[in-house]
Image (tube, rainbow, N blue to C red; front, side):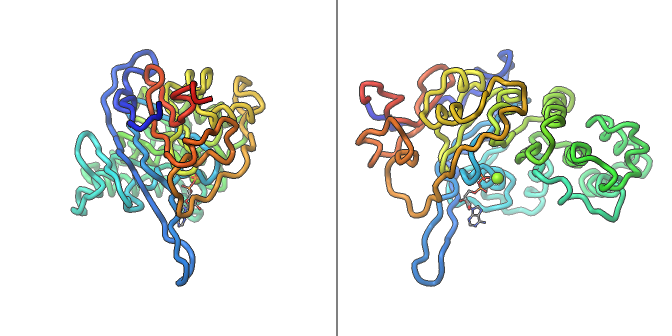
Length: 349
Ligand SMILES: Nc1ncnc2c1ncn2[C@@H]1O[C@H](COP(=O)(O)OP(=O)(O)O)[C@@H](O)[C@H]1O
Ligand SMILES: [Mg+2]
């Protein structure tokens, strides 16, 4: 049988959430697609950065989006943050469509509730001001009801929340006085100043030393508990995704090729690409960090793709169906889906 239906698994994040936590969809995307025009006046072509991505992030859930560089992870985050318009597809926040929001006020409200944290916190901190500056500015913009004193107290509370203490002293520091890990904590504090419900964290620990990464991952887990935030955690590192995420989505060349509970995706991967990633990681069960620098090779640039599986040229299991029918995500186990003809029907092998 050739899989052609999208599985319903992405609709039930709670079922697979850690410790069976009941979970309502907070952010949901359906068939999210983003293309870019590339090339000169002659021979303009279309790069498919993201195609048909379905995703759901539940209440207080941490969902990892994993894939090698160029697979479309940041584009997904930018689409969800409304930094890029979608080429096609829908985004819903708490049941309300957002991809087509026209009103400035509603866009601003959405952007407050869905925050982004980037890989390099240095780039978002002004070097000429102490860190209090950015935090207070975010509070003035997003929480104008706070008095001056209340703002100051809130800034201190936020720094404590992200583990930067003594908060009063930390507020006076300049970015260059902080370590990379501390700067990324400031990045989280600035996002939290808006009281977000979702944080889209795009490779937040990739630039940090292995030894400090785990502290930041623990911070995300704590913020989910203490501030009730849900996370999309973007990474190319399977070990960190396994460490922190309830569910995992694996991207390849703009498509989600596998999704499911993290532990299960890693112990029983169904898609040959996930199997390859695991084989390439030195040891995904090793203490965090040791497996972090896996080199998975180059993903293709997806320019004017035809039908068929995009992983086909690298796939040891490819059969003729893979050449002309694009596999869709299909549920193969409880909450566990893969987009692979052969995984869906082992008789094809
Ligand atoms: N603004 C853009 N213009 C043209 N191509 C882009 C743009 N942004 C991303 N891309 C392309 O889209 C693909 C996915 O990129 P990206 O989402 O940044 O991947 P990842 O975050 O997984 O490394 C890449 O081939 C990249 O070159
Ligand atoms: Mg990226």
